[in-house]
Structure formats: structure tokens, C-alpha cells
Length: 76
Image (tube, rainbow, N blue to C red):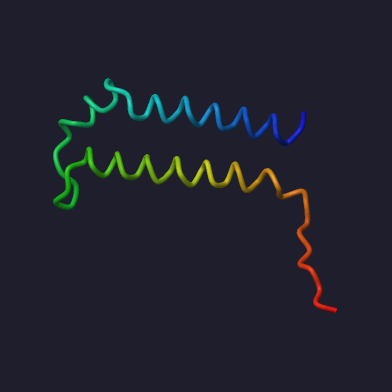
């Protein structure tokens, strides 16, 4: 399987994971948890899940070019 197809499948899986993480039933469960260190648990969950998705998307897109070695041009 090519790297582009694998990256596309991983991005689709991340989209579905994000859709599930930010969907109503899960957010409703976390809405009544109270506070953690003075901050609402829902806010911590939202920002944590958002940051995790961004990191996973970045790793997926950067990992696509890991097989290619980039050589900087020489100034000779």
C-alpha cells in the first residue's frame, strides 16, 4: 500500500475519532464532572482532545515523507 493511501486512511480515521470525541453524548457525560484544579473538566477535555488531534494529524502528515531524505542544496 502506498504512503499516500495509508496517510489518507489515517486522516479519515482521525476525522471519525474527532467527530466522536466532540459529539453530544460524550460531551454531555463530561459536562457534569465538576472542576479539576479550579477549571471545569469539560474545558480541560475539549482543549486536551483538540491538542491531541492536532498532534496526531501533524504526525500523520509529517510521517508521510519520512522515507524521503531531503538534502539541502550546496552553495558551491
